[in-house]
Length: 445
Image 1 (cartoon, rainbow, N blue to C red):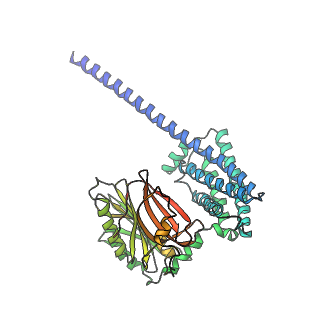
Image 2: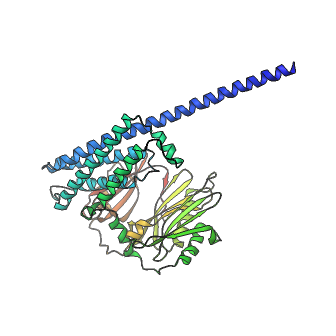
Image 3: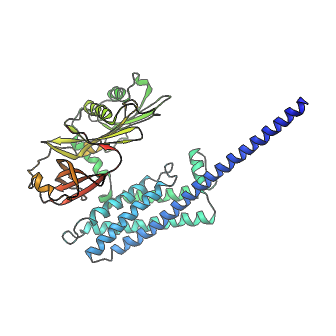
């Protein structure tokens, strides 16, 4: 009798386990199908937008009306933003597709800067017309190559999930058409943007400006390691791995990495002065235990320890137990927004887990700041009267043409939303209106 009860019990357990496994399998398949559908839609949308982008770039070459040209450039800028979204939904983080993303960014920056100026007063220069021709030529190449990948994907019924799983597991996929196609696109874009005639979109020029603000002692590898121990809060330098940039690099630097059972981290330090260019620490987070303001105090201490002088907090935000703080350089009571650093602080412990000093190191120099033509009260008259102003200050910001201008910054509320409004301190022009999203607090002395 007991024997039959045990057999029945085992049978029930077996059936239950099999049914549970079946449900798990069905649920997993549903997730995979949903992910595959997302990838397919994003890819076909990207191909479609590249078609439109190429058409509209071609149309700009035949336009003679400044108004039409400005509107067309704005549409191109919007298309590049949408294409960025499409790319972000593809499993391309494991593929060498960075040059294409950078190229789309460059198109967006160029078209936006050009479209937002008065083209009747400042028509396109010969160099800008040449740039448009080059953009059109490259967009045509990208469109054709994406079309080819799209054709083969549909013809051979290829799945994006196979690509993602194979790349994640460092395996060769059954069919490498998709990978090969995107590598070809990226290779062609890389060759195109490295052409000296296209230097207006090349980011390497701004990288070279970093040297303008560096005047420190050139550090050895051992000195870099000693500094990194403080940055990573470790005592033994054997836990750190250091590598130097290749000869001929625009900015000679060291990359230092650290990893233990709980966290991994890396930092880029410039050889000249040992300035930290970037820092990122990955680790699990526990519950929040300190306030956004307490996190600011830790961020301020870090900035001071890195020898950044006269830095003032511009804004702070809280996202997922992380405080994000932007500090800007202050000269003669005027805050210089291009000279900024960003610090990320974990609000469970107050540990600094991220830092970027690139903007400061690229842009910093002492400026000749003229007295504003408008008074603060005169500038206020150019702010929307429905905005309730809470704070105001004099700042130097960059406009859409990347020109530094002196402005009054007003922070105010409208319909329970917070806005940052920049008014030109010389002519009263509204230079920029920015909505401050998410929970944010601005600290002032």
